[in-house]
Amino acid sequence: MPGKKFDFTPEPAKKPRRVLTRDDWIDSATEILVSKSVDSIHPAALATELGVTIGSFYYHFKDRSDLLVSLLKKWHERTTAQVVHSYGGAPLEEALAGLLSLPSHGVTARRAAMVEFAIRAWARRDEMAREAVKQVDQQRIDMLAAAFRKSGFARGDAESRSFLVYSYLLSEAILWEVTDAKSRKRHLTFARKLFLMPV
Image (cartoon, rainbow, N blue to C red; front, side):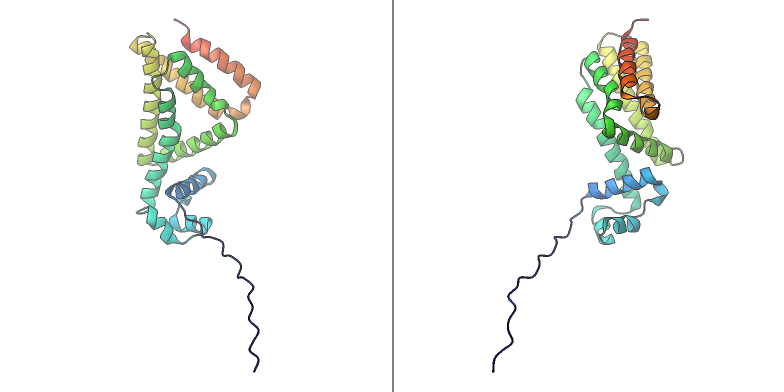
């Protein structure tokens, strides 16, 4: 008796399942922080957004608090530790030129500013975030002050100038839509001269 014809057509290959890293979860949480608020960051919602089970979250984090701490640490690493590594110890004019140009780095700078504003909004009502922002601000200002002191400015003068430079950088980020590329370039040239000018 003839047997059933066998179908040798290969099965379509299954799409490999994506393996998420800690950074994937942190990046997704950061997106929610920027677009909504810290109150909207929940493991179950993130898992749904990423298309994975909640078990993937607990493989990387103990709980929601662990994720939030990791988010703040990643923010520090990306926006402060890397900058300190690049410009800490550099000659003043080189450090100043590099730092003052950061707000002009197009989409990258705009994205970094949006994350920064979201974290600062969170810090207004949360002690952990407030302490993280305070430490980041101090580390950035100290790096600038060290550059001014290394260049020969007295301690008080160096501290005042570093605070003004830092205030300028934050203002450039806040006022992004008020200025265009041409005016930002003009401001940058003027600011560099102003911050180095003897008083």
